[in-house]
Image (cartoon, rainbow, N blue to C red; front, side, top):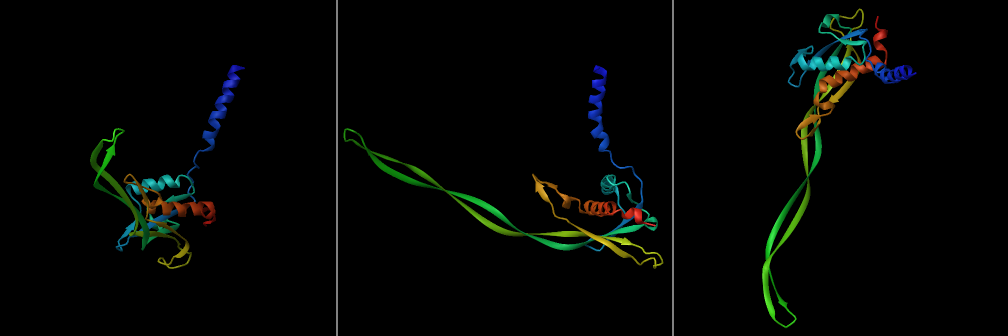
Length: 203
């Protein structure tokens, strides 16, 4: 009976782990990446940490895969940028302390009068709002599909996504999707393809 109870306990513990396994990698569609930066420089493909981060994101889907071979790709993720400005307000607080002399007299129960002197400090706190601007880029991704029979350079935009290149900082460390805009906009496009079963519709 104790052995059976132990087996059941292990089954309850292990089952949730098995249920959270990532999907098997079974590529139904391959995409290539072309990126044109704000200075009009063109990069083909992903490399190093960026490639590693994208592959990690794609492992959540299984049927959407990246390829460095543009000729073999079913579609191209064309990424480019457009400038934008964030308008914010920063609240600043300043304090100022003044020291002033003070004096007075004290009379005791016997009628004796004493003179005292000293200083008094007065602190004034002022709060003000200061507007500021931050320049950043919005990363736009077009899913480009080459239709059958069309010229090699003729593509149709299937869907468009964007990701702001703006992020928060905490103790000088950046966080948020805007920290890695290219990786996250690719993830958004791949997730959309996966959820809409578009890889399965490819001929």
